[in-house]
Image (cartoon, rainbow, N blue to C red; front, side):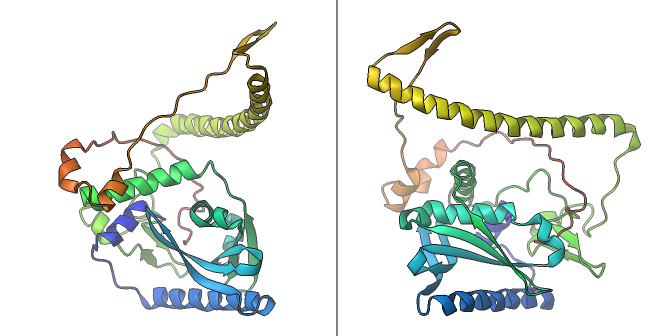
Length: 312
């Protein structure tokens, strides 16, 4: 979800009261979670744990279903059949990966995301395999949130690619109306366009530049995917070569193509400031003079126009 929204909620910013439709969605979510739990309960009577608490230094999460006998966690979600091609959503994969990272791996857990299509009652399940490559980015996001709410006591900034009339800030409903984030006013009341308006088409004068940018972005994405596959293959060779160097105690390998050297960096020392704060060894006032703000990062992202107004 939106990182700014989460910090606004933690800092008790005023939110719009939920609409009747939002309350209905909330209660429907509980109903379908009960339904999924009952399916598992039929197979494993008395062995389905619900809302299992996951305590971490970053905060607390809750696993929807934990099937004790098979060490299996289930994250329950609802959606509609028209969105099935978008499943599973990346933010849900992130959520389950964090559960596995902080809790599931220690319990030899397998995991899945179960989506109930509300309009048909169909259940779609997607196995989730722990992906360690996701974790550093997610932990960095959590770190920035912790700093925002504990040290800065300010919400995170509005992401660069967000706009008042675009999802997830606001979106069209199937009936043609508008829905918006509960914290929309906290972000956009200063905007010159206080009410969401449809996206404006880009000036045709920029067509050539935008077309070239789009083509380059697509090519770069494709090359990155190819590069990852090559890097993964290279790592398998390096693992075998590393074992050989360890066995032979050689510093490098001399070949007709050059000398291959392995460099092993020394461990670095770091200090867990959050743990020191929690234990009362230091205070926020003491470390405030040493606070550093990173430079803002500028990112450019192409999105499918059909998905800009899709519901969460």
